[in-house]
Image (cartoon, rainbow over all chains, first blue to last red):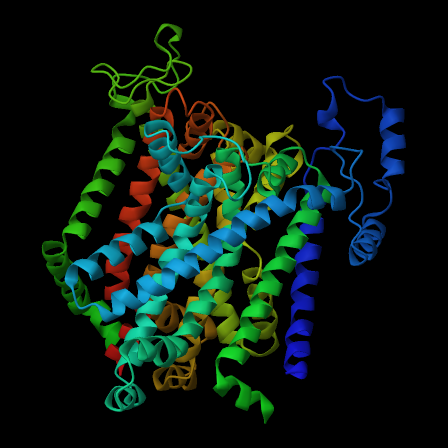
Length: 312
Length: 317
């Protein structure tokens, strides 16, 4: 277990380093200085030079790269250029929790709704159920997040007046319904599709027939025998859709007016706030890698075959 | 020469594929509706200049109007006709989709073919790079690239970039978007092409060709590339909707197409600001892009059923 864990952890390091290097150089090759947008009047050259010196922007690029990497390893991404009273770490601490709650709730909803619906689609021979589920999953996979959010807000916020159209009053309020559901739709569709396929595959295997023959209750067979075997492909979906939810939060938070990290990132790109852009991107990349690691480890727990393979 | 190759040459495969597609259209109402909607959108894009209203003409007396007989989809916050703007937005989306696909497929085919054909260290390095790019959220990368490309091209014209800067200005920022998406969208294509070339490169007819003294370029050109065509078609069905999705996403954030050029993404972003009073400004562009992507996905599914690489491999055996 431990060696498997360490191996997977080490494999993530080159990916992170490549991400860091790529983001660092792209951000620096982008023209426009962070001091441009602070005022309509151009800064005095002397003032600009002082600012550059204060933030080490006048060092050679490779020195900046090494400095920044060293800082990032200690969790220090420097001060934000746009909001100079805050460090990137402060901004993350302030804005990330909202986005994490939103994204976590969306993923949970996708799994909790997706598994029963996927099983239902596999077990039900009724063409209407199968058809309805196929329509939902096609819609979920094709419709971009910003379209789903827009339509839901207009329908339920403006048209019916059931939910507020703008703002955020915490996860357990009506204001989170539309954002959470619009983020959850695509992963939900994927979980349904995936779980349906793998349930259909497991359904006709010999051990299921044995379980039926020895008189186990149908629910026990579905949950313990079929469900557990069909779970692994569905868990993969969670890993694959993590970055989808992260990116979806840019649009959902912007449209629904949620003060989260996604909306902050969109504003930071426009303002060329390098430390925030690099910090955010790295945190997102790290997040995706960690989630995929957890998904890999969950195979280890869910599937005895993986365990024996690595025990050897 | 493989049977598949022969099929393509004598047209037998093409006829069969067309027949298969025809049968699907008759039996699948979803596919028919999707094709019809796509024809509508393409028609709208082509006929955009013939519409009675100009997409850029502002009319302060008729701002934020709900749909009327004069303005079928209403007018926006500057009194511009929404239908005309959706039509021009369709042009932007389609041009970006086609150009992006050409760039992405060209890069993907080149990288995939070279990587698979040379093999060894080149292949390892290239594929390790592609793998780590996969770990990186694509939209995030597109946003960074768009900021870079836009920054480089939207400034003063200088040096070798001067013609590009001019073209960028004339295209209303479209050039930046399609360069960005072309440069970020080739990963899937390169993987698909690579695996196809890998499976073919040790085929007996390729070996025979090499023994008879053919050059690498000749083998790639006459045997390997034609056999990647089904895979490339599959890649196209994936790249096109993705390009439209990302273009609208970038424009939504404000680093895509420059205003006043209409883009569905920009229209959604501005529509979202007046959602309470004028929901039609949000719903019209959202439905336009949503239904376009839905249609493209349905058609893509049908095409992938026909050109599936696994199926193509089975035909060969």
